[in-house]
Image 1 (cartoon, rainbow, N blue to C red):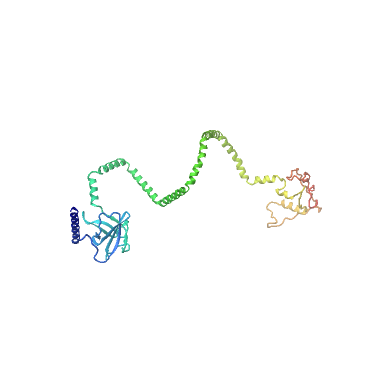
Image 2: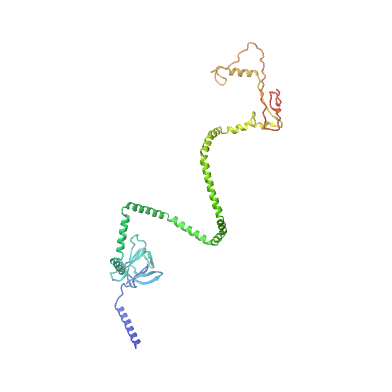
Amino acid sequence: MTRLMSRRVSAAIVAVCFLAMAGCRLPGGAPSGQSYQVIAEFGDVLDLVPQAAVKVNDVTVGSVEKITLSGWNARVQMAIDRSVRLPANATAAIGQTSLLGEKYVALSAPIDQPAEGSLGDGAVIPLSRTSRSAEVEEVLGALGLLLNGGGLAQIKTISQELTKAMAGRESTVSDLLTRLDTFLAGLDAQKADIVHAIDALDRLSAHLAAQRTTIASALTALGPGLTVLAQQRKQLTDALTALSRLSGVGTHVIEASRTATAESLASLRPILDQLVTAGDNLPNALDFLLTYPFPPNVTGAISGNFVRLHATLDLNGADILANLLTQQSPPGAATSSGSGPTPTIPQLPVPLPLPVPTPTLPKLPPLPIPTPSLAPSILPTGLCGPIPLPVGC
C-alpha cells in the first residue's frame, strides 16, 4: 500500500512538472529564423544552463544549445541568428541580468585589438578570449571577510612596518627599484640566450643520463686511486710543507741579490747597446778574421797545396807620369771631365828616356791559412815569390 502511494505521488509530481513546462517558456529561446552554430570555451560556466540567452550589446540574438565538458574546460555550443555579424576574433563572457537574475552569454568585438574577418558557422572562440563575471556569493564572501577584520589588521601592520623600514631611505629604495628594472630588462633581452642555455643543459643532462653506466664505472675506477692518495696524505703534506720552506728561502735569496742583479743588468746595458749598434759588422768581421789578409771567398781559390792568384799591373811610364801630374794640378783647375783647357805635360829639358821603376810588394808576416793541407812556404814573400803567376815577372 505504501509503495502504491509513493508511485502515485511521484506520478503526480511528474505530471505537474510537465504541465508547468508546457505553460511556461524557458529563458532565452532559439532564434526564430535561420542560425549558425558557434562554440565558446570557458574555464567555468557557473550555473549557465541550456536555452540561456546569447546577447550582443544587451540584445538577445540566440541561445545556448548545449554544454559539454572537454578536459577541464566547458564547451558551450550556441545558435546565433544568421543576420548577426561578428568579427572572427570576437570575445565571449558569461554575464548576469541582475543581482539574482539568470546567466547569459555576451558576445562582443575585441576591445584591445581591431576586428578581423567574420565569425562563421562552426567557429570556436578559444579560452584566451572568454571570461566570466564575479558571482554574488564571491562578492559577499570577500565583503564579509573585509568587514569582519579578516585582513585589515594584517594590511595595516604591513603598511606601518613598510613605512618604518623605508623612512629616510626613499632614494635607496628608488635606486633599488631602478636597478631591479634594469636587471629585469637585461633578463628579458637575454631571454633567447637563457632558453638556449637551458636547452643545452637539458641536452647535457640527457647525454649524462645516457652515459650513466660509463660514469659509474669511472667513479668505481677512481676508488683505488683515492685510496692511494689517502695513504700518501702525510708524504704529500710533508712535500707541500718543504715546498713552502723552499719558497721562503728563494724569496730571501731574491730579495738579498736584487740590488746586485739590477746593477749587473745595468752594467750589461752599454755592452748590449754597442752590440746592437755593431749590427752585422761583428759577424762579418769574425768571418773575415779566419781568412785575413785575404777576403772570405779566398777558399774558392785554394786548390790542393797552392793558391791561385791573378794580378794585372800597369807599368806604362807615360800613364804613371800623367796621373801624377793630374794629381798635382792646382785647386780650381778644370779636369778632363769638365769644361776648359786640358792640362798638358811640360817638356823636359833633356830628352832622356825615363827610368821605369820596378814596384815591389811589402813583405807580410806569415799568417795561418784555414786550410790544413797548405804549407807555410806558399805564403807570398814578394812580387815574384813562390806563388805561381799566370804572367812572368
